Length: 573
Ligand code: GLY
Image (tube, rainbow, N blue to C red; front, side):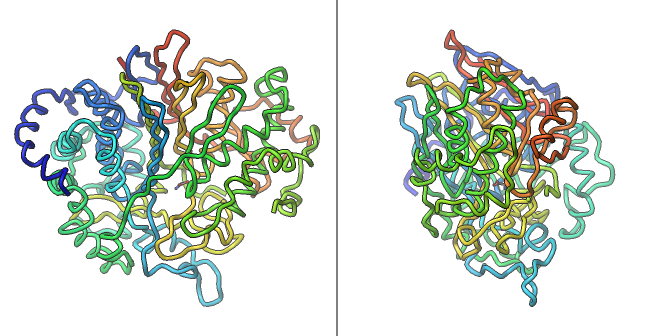
């Protein structure tokens, strides 16, 4: 790749320069993450203070938002190993300073040996756990190619500089937070079930402050630094992944890796009142569903009804029911299936979809199934999101994932990273729910080389032609409804961003036919009113974890992380 040859000539000089400007010292940063920050020029919100610091240091060193995002995602692969990754995939929505909106899809792909029945037994029933744990659950990772392509197209600083903080964090190690210690302890049995020891993640009783050092990962990152995409998709790293596959009956091949390519795609766009929504197209369902939801509620006076008025919740839940029914039937990888994007967003279709909405009675999801144009959470939600704006006017909304916590739990021995279990996001059998309780159909059936449907909703919202909000979240199927609700908390209910993010959320995903509510989120009286309309309610501790940036009236930036993740961190300048 000519660009990398060019970089190689200057890399020694640039590294020396960079090492003198890199301000992040992992050992010194306290885990007192900052949930809210203001900045006149730039802002970074991420799931971890060290990742935020890396992004911010790149901006301060003259990088733009795309540079900061690339550096931040590599750093997350080190300091947020349960979801930040190089063994997974993601989506990036970019709005440049000139107002151009574009997305890059680096979602994982099904390996060439995958087929639609690969998780079924001889009777045609799902084999429990096969699509979620172990080698067969992994899709071909997309992160490294996605980040490199994003940088090639829009980056300013040399790639070698952007990946250097991650290498240092992996080499030196960093003290883990209480949340990370809890997660690592929770998954010890899973780690042991599919990995050999010694392994840096397998240890009895992790404690806050223990230093996690990842020397194998540092070596892999150094190979990527030196060779670009070939440092991951070819040579030693590719060999390590394939060896891992052979040992665990996985199917990712050298050819799958060398053929992987991230895809530039036009965003899906829609208008809600005076706001322009720019979001991720299929293979994510996020952008389409978000715009459908906003268009479905737009004709109703929710501003007058108010936040968490029973009429408002009922309307929003009914819109959610319909959008998720569409998701399960019509959405999948557009490169394999003709997703009817325009039809799903057509004003006549949206109007028709809400024709059977009753203002005081819940519709049965079984009736929605019959209407046309024609899930049960088993594991905590894990994915991760970062929102970034720079002083030049570029904005990036990035959601990336291994799917479950630590993906399929397989740690590539010689590579030093976890692999995803994204194959579970396909519909393994029509009508049978995946780990998020989501059901699917032909549009999202497994096929070799296909990308699995996602709910990730990295979004940028404009008002008066300028960036108004950068928003997204981890949270499996609840991501879409969280972005929908937090945006409306600001745009319709006039909440400051901190309150909008903090406010309790609810979620309907068509099947199972119930509204998920957060613990202590809705008063008993309100719950009774919703039940009287025919809704079933079900409580969970918390759902998606928003990371958002809003432009304030004076032109400055407000960044907000979510208390739902103790390590969420917002910093700006
Ligand atoms: N793996 C979660 C999602 O992509 O929606």
